[in-house]
Image (cartoon, rainbow, N blue to C red; front, top):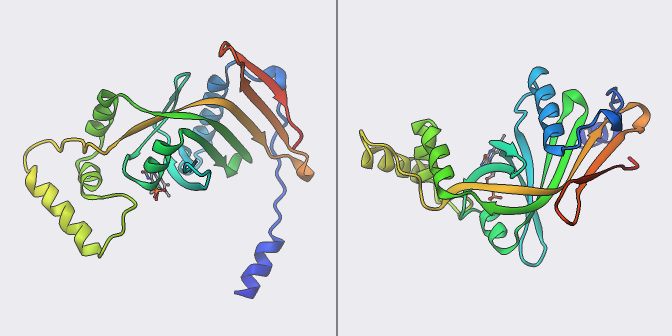
Length: 218
Ligand SMILES: Cc1cc2nc3c(=O)[nH]c(=O)nc-3n(C[C@H](O)[C@H](O)[C@H](O)COP(=O)(O)O)c2cc1C
């Protein structure tokens, strides 16, 4: 254990990303995000749409976890989960949330923050219908983030859902669906040599029309 701790303290990679040029960045941060997602896809980064989602309860106590980004546009960044989960409960109490992407092969990070809203139920229905039946059953069988007595109980719940809807489509559970995070800031970070990294941040103008783009010290 001590040797692993020592190794952890000594890990030191150099980052060799190419510099960011403000003039090459899009005026629209979502379009810029799309370019970086495209780079991540073409570099065959593993799980490029996996994103850390931070939420906080009413008292401001934070919690984080990974979810999968399912769509992004000027309206916001969407993901799907259980409305009754810990994150769901927190977003009910406090609509502020933040996301962090990390694409290690590219030495890149994107951070964004803003407010979350639930997607309209038709959009959640449409996405739920597009999922494999097994994933639909798992969503219906799970009370995400509640204590579970045993693995057998979860598997029994899944078998019961499968049996109940044999030869029928699985309906979307009422407490499962999408959220949309509408960002008011988006920051692009590029790792560079000797820790002299680049950062470019977009902040939404107070009249909501357009964005201000600035550099940040790394
Ligand atoms: C790669 C990866 C992708 C995940 N995708 C999702 C997802 O899209 N939706 C989701 O609810 N949980 C997803 N999870 C599980 C969450 O990280 C988390 O365990 C779960 O949502 C419960 O979180 P909570 O108790 O904070 O609400 C994913 C986990 C990993 C590691």
